[in-house]
Length: 573
Image (cartoon, rainbow, N blue to C red; front, side):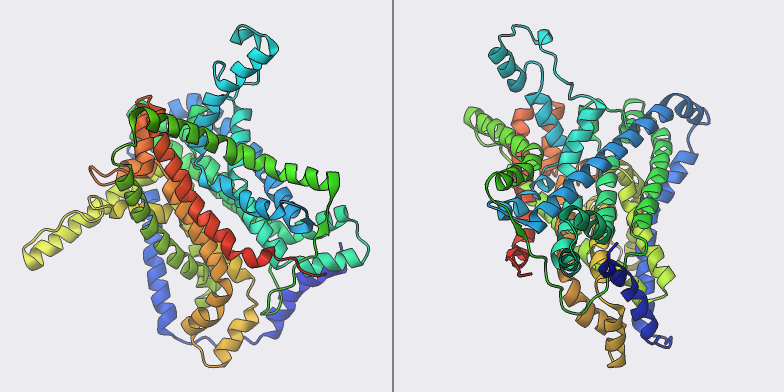
C-alpha cells in the first residue's frame, strides 16, 4: 500500500483532532430538524408496523407451511441471485469506471454517457425483450437455424434464458450503472492526485488499480452495490418472466394467487431481515473510509492514451454492456412500437399517461431531494448517533417491494384521511375528499418512502467529501447550523444532491407495483398502461408506452452527464 493512501486514511483523524469542538447550545433549527426527522421516521416505519400487524393477524397454520415448503428454496434462490448480481455489477461498474477514467481513446466520451443508458430501462422490459428475442421460435434462434441448416427448434439447443443464470446476467447488465456512476465520480473528482503519486513512485497500472484506486473507491462501490442489490431484491417483473422464484415472487404468488395477505406479509418480513443484512454489509464496506482534502476539488488523473488495437479493444469492452443493457432491448422496443403504430395508429391516451407519470414522479423527486439532503445532514445538525439512526431508517423504505409498501401505507393513510375528515367536519361542517388515498397523495408518499434511500445515499456521499473543519469555520464566523449547511455544505454537494434526485426520478418513472395499487381511480401512468397490455397478452400495444418510459428515463441521464461535462476535459498530470 502506497504512502499516499496511508496519508489519505490519516487525514480525517488529524482534522477531527485539530478542530475545536463547539460547545453544545440550544438552537431552534436543530430542534425543528429533530421534530421533522421524527415525523419522517414515523412515516417510513408505519408500513413496516402495519405489515407486522398484518403478519401477526394471519392464521397460525400459514407460517409452518411457508417455513416448510416456500421459504427455504425461495431464500436460497434469492441469495444466489443477489450474489451473482452483486459480483456482476461490481465487475461491470468498476471496470467501466476505470476504463473511461484512466484511459484516453476514440469513443471514450461517448462511453461516459452511454454506460449510464441502462438506468433508463426497467428490468421487466429488458427481460420481456430478451424472452421474445431468444425464444426458440424468436428471431435470434430462427436466424441461427437458418444459417446452420437446422430444421427444428429442438435440434438447436441454446442456453435457456428463463433460468437463474439468465436472470443474473440480465439484471447485472441493467443495474451496473448504480456502481459505475459513484465510482467514476470518485475516480474523476477525488482520486486523481493519489493515483498520480502512485504512478510517479513507479507502480504498474495493475498495482495502481488494485492497491490505490480500489481501496479509495470502496465507499462508492459499497454504496452502488447495495443499491443494485436492493433493486434486485425488490424486482418482480424480470424474475417472474424468467421463472426465478425469489422471495419477492413468492410474496406476489401468496398474496394474489392464494389471496393470503398475512402470509405475504410474513414473507415480506423475511425479506426485510435480508435487506438489513445488506445494509449492514454496505456499512461494513464503507467503514473507515472518510474523505479528506481541501475545499477545492482535487486534480483529476492524467489518462493514458491508447491507439490502434488497444483503443479498439477498449471501445469494444465499453460498448458490450451498453449493447446488452440498453441498445438491444431499446431496438426491440423501437421495432415493436413502429409495428404497432403502422398497424393500428398511435395509442390514445398515452400523452395523458405520460403527463401523469411526470407529475407524480416529479413531486416525489422534489420531496426526496429535499428530505434526502436534510436527512444526510442530520449528523452535522444534531447528535451524531441520532442523525445516523435516521439515515438507517430512511434506507428501510428500499427494503419492501412496491406492492407490499403500498399495502402497508394504505392503513396509515386511510386512518389519516379519516382523522382529517372528522376534524374538517367538526370545524367547518364539510368533509374533504380523500387526499392520501384518493387524490394521488398516497402514490407520491409511496415513491418518497421507497426511493428516499437513493437520495440520502447520494447526499451522504457528497457530504462525506466536505471536511468537517469547514463547518467549524462557518460556526466560528457566526453562522448557525442551518446557515452553515445552506451556505457551505449545499454549494459543495449540489452535484451529489442532483445526481440522487435524477436517480430517484428514473426509479419513480419505472416503478410498477406501488403505482398499480395506489394510483387514483381512472388514472393511468405509462407503467400501468404497459402492465395492462402485458396482462392481456398484447405487449406490442404497450411498446409505445414502454418506449416512452425509456425516453423519459434518458432525459435525466442526459442532464446528469451534461452537468458532469466539465469532468470530461483532459487534465494534465
